[in-house]
Each structure stands twice: as structure tokens, then as C-alpha cells.
Amino acid sequence: MMKKNLLSSTIAAGLALFVGGPVSADVGQAAIDGCIDQIRAVGGPDGQSGTVISSEYSEANSLIMFRDAGNTVWRCLVSNDGVVADLTVSQAADDGDGAMAGASDSGTERVTFASGTSGAELTGSLQPQESSRYILGARDGQFLYFRLAAQGPGMTYVIYNPDGSVLLDEMSADQEYRGQLWQSGDHIVEVYNTSNSAQSFNVIFGVE
Image: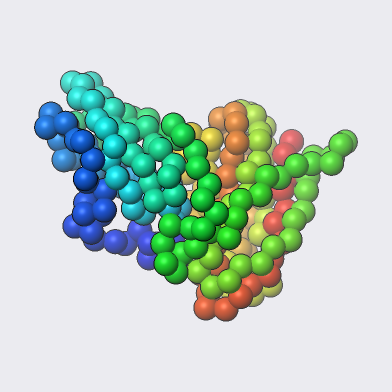
């Protein structure tokens, strides 16, 4: 699967990409690694590389700031043994060009519902190893329905909470999602084409 392949980069390679900013000597490597791993897990293609831009040591949770390959700035609160307490996007950026060769981002689209309706259906297409993001505003306690209707094999999706954490890890197109949300704000559904051929698809959203 494309996303899993992206996340399988070696630790050594990850450190070479990330460590290079003004890291305080008091912030341990375990804390830095914990933030890097979490950003890789939720940051999509752009989150697979980047730079530590600042750090501030604390006995409770240190504060580490990262800039990923798409110029999004992440704010990570992490314990000294590498347990991430909070990861949020401090400054969002959409470069529209993706971060890695073979894992490009075809674009981002905001999902809106017509007046008096609670759902929407959109069409799209992706080249091999491309992804596309859909942004949908919803509230804590509402129920989200999502379906990816793919025209061929190899299509998957991931759903992210507004704080960047994973609401639903990578799922194949034949598995729809229906569940209650626990955060308010912009949720992101990222659709991946992990196949070696272009794919057309529909995405169906519903919020109650």
C-alpha cells in the first residue's frame, strides 16, 4: 500500500531529513523521534520529511516545532521519553505539488452541501501514486458518513481529525465509514491511488 510504503522509511533517513534546525541540547532524541514518527503517521506525503525549526525543553512536555516538506508548521508537545501529548498544525500550507517523488498531491478541495441537504457527491481522478485531499467542516458529536466509490483496484483513504490525529487509518475503497466525530473543525479525507494506473472515483459525504 502506498501510505505504508511511505511510512517504512528508515529511522536513519528520517533523522537525516528532520534534524537540522536549532534543537536545544536539553530536548532528548527520543522526544524528537516521537514527534517525527507522529507527523509521518498523520501528515500525508508532505509529512514524510522536513526540519526541526525550534524546541523548548520542559520537564513535563517539551515543545518542538517542525516545518514539513509542504511548508506546514507542526506544534508538538512531547514527553522526554517520546510520548506525544498533543500534535496540532500551527501554520497550514498547501503547496499543491506534493512533497515526494512518486507521492504527489493532486490538490485539495473543500466539501460543501447544497442548502437543505446533509450530503454531497464529488468525482475525481488520480494518476498512479497520487493523492487528493477533501476538507469537510463538522462538529463534535455529529455523525460522518464517507464512501469511496472506485472504478478500479488500489484506491484507499485516511480520515484525519482537525488536530491532525488519525480518525480512521488507511482503509480500502470497499469499506465505507460511518462514525461519530469527537472534534469540531475541518476534517480531512485523503484519497490515495496506490495502483500503477490512473483511476477515476466518486467520493460521497454525509453529516448528521
